[in-house]
Length: 136
Image (tube, rainbow, N blue to C red; front, side):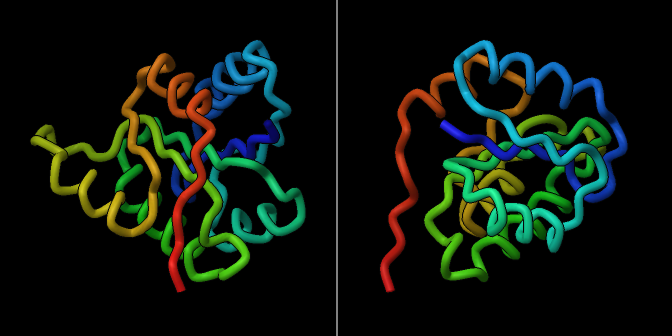
């Protein structure tokens, strides 16, 4: 499976992306890494160019909700990318409160999964190999 791995727009961390790349490659996936600070437009362009089977977004800085929402809405606005599986992991916020509402909004906007920082959850999501159902 070809996976496009990316940081979010405001997140300059790279250690998480290095770890995830190694983890995904160890599982046998081909990984296209975009690096940190990836805008929604750059992410969308890269998805069109590389035609991945899934997108994995990672956030460490605590702005994963805001950046992830922008990214997934941009991806879902493209008809050719509407069924592309998108998973977001890492820190969603910095407020220290329950994030159930944020997760629900991300799922409603088009994320297929919001996984926190559990690599086994990511492994399970990718192993399921499901694609998003889109009705016109």
